[in-house]
Image 1 (tube, helix red, strand yellow):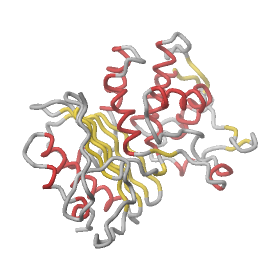
Image 2 (spheres, one colour):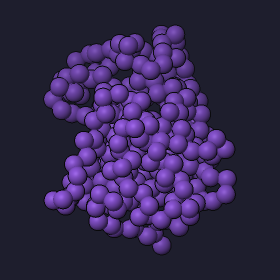
Image 3 (cartoon, rainbow, N blue to C red):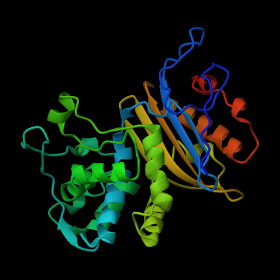
Image 4 (cartoon, rainbow, N blue to C red):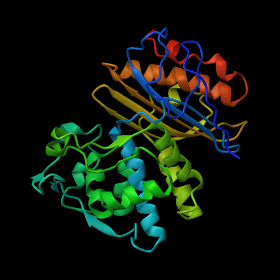
Length: 304
């Protein structure tokens, strides 16, 4: 049976409250930055959360739901991930169907651009979307999955707050406020589904975890954990946004999900340091070395 802990948001109390984002006591100090945090012990089902239903711009964390949808389509016989498709850089806006292309400057890694006008398998493109966070790969694959089917799957796995409505750099949609969003709780449910969902095959769950373990960007969750801890995760960052959503496999205890979403830090390095501090504390809690009341979230948000 899953345990969900509900606690007050005193400035010294801590972990984590599902569904009470924005509820603060009058004497609680104002925190200049925002975080959403969600943890799930995958053996006991225990859930701990802080500001977990607050919606954040999803940034590249939205790529994990796309991957999940692709494997679900494969398992239903709709899609062959070994099939090859053209790599192209022309997409349609969800606003009016007008065409747009991705600027190379929008990418953290240009790994897919040398393959323009070539054919690659769904699987190769999908792996680049996750491990190198390729925006070009994301937009190509979304044209095959569609936003509606991803949304239906998110509802199926009860990933509340996760909304993938468009590809990357659809500026007409962005200017109208039509953005992909997530909550820490919703992304926790996505990662739980990657680990144990009944809606995809055992082999698909393992393949997804293996891809996430090959993530190239490791400056948040892995930075806060011992070197021998295996992490399967997906980051996401844009201006004043830095996220990480992970499956963590401690060598001496049950695996767990940990998600941290951040908003408001001017530089990603500061947000990543905060994330690493939070993950380090939660990891010690998971191993029984700390109590819930030992983790003061506002203190961990301070830039130091």
